[in-house]
Image (tube, rainbow, N blue to C red; front, side, top):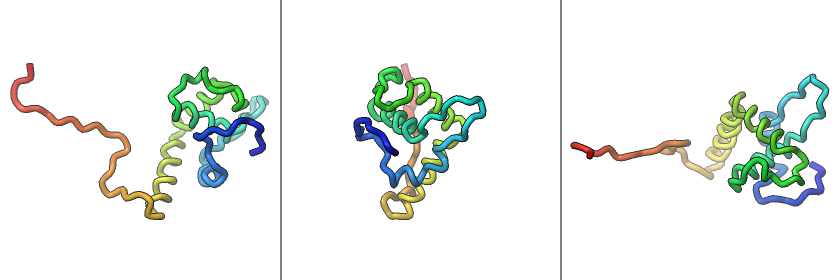
Length: 119
């Protein structure tokens, strides 16, 4: 990635990108539009998700619009590529002994139920 923009803590490293590049790189559409930089789109999504900023507050130095970044993330989700990326990284971390997943939850809420009348 040859880019002159500021480095953000949320940026994906070369090694991390090499692990997911095949899943995170979407095919070129045939409508003639210039293809966005897929890694920068991924970095832009990570920036928004890690900082909690609004899409339209995405710094301009990413070189892609907030709309393009949002559409990229939405496409990854719609094609279930985010789940595949997560599963790949989770498996790699588990095989390397960095995490133990024998009793874990990706997304769960546990609420103790009350007995008796609830007023």
